[in-house]
Amino acid sequence: MTPCNFTVLSRTAVLLWMHDPAGRDATIVRKCLTVDANIQGATEVICSRTPSQLQHLRQIYHSKFGTYMEHDIEATTFGDHKKILLAFLTTPRHEGYEVNREIAQQDAKFLYKAGEKKLGTDEKAFIRIFSERSAAHLAAISSYYHDMYGHSLEKAVKNETSGHFAYALLTIVRCAEHPGKYFAKVLHKAMKGLGTNDATLIRVIVTRTEIDMQYIKAEYLKKYRKTLNDAVHSETSGHYRDFLLQLLGPNV
Image (cartoon, rainbow, N blue to C red; front, side, top):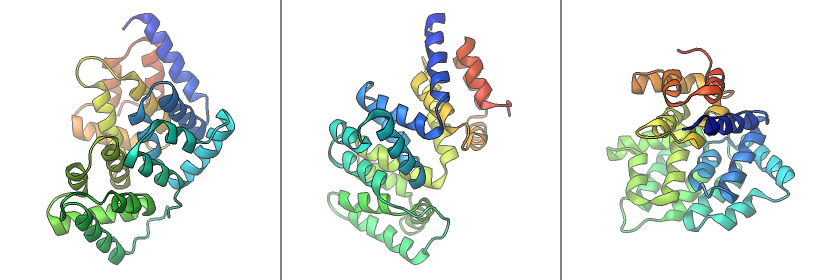
């Protein structure tokens, strides 16, 4: 990549960082939906945020852009993917760690009957449970699913759904179980192979630095035997590299 490109990238990262967290998310989602057609990027942001973060995001989105996020989702997404995004965005959910184990076990059975046990898939059942249950509750469902059926809920989602809809469900359940591990994998994929997905690199590092970057870095080192700082250093250069490394903090 040329020095000019890195100047553009460093400017993009710095300008995004200048917003507050909800403003960053609003800017990313708006650009993904209306400029870049990056549906996966918008899905990642929406499906990895807490209910209170999403409520704030919706308010900032409307005040910044003069339109409701729901309207932009309606205009740019389709089918079950659109339904899960709208449901996850607008449905109130508990944010605490308390879980009713009996209900979680029932939900695991319900998802099995709605998916792997039948011909075809009851997508409405997946949308309802994934949008209404808390992160802690979904993590418990996933644990019960594995105990009862011998493989993960994630594998069931992959078997029963596809495309952007599957990506949304997988993002929700992975972030419910371990957001640090999820974002470590997203970052690794962005830097794997030839070239670097700079949009993803900027999106994740800038938006997660103040939330859980220490956990993401720990998971990255654990899984890939390399520090996240070293990976970013090898894939970037110039002021762009300097700024990202500054956000990441100490190389541990």
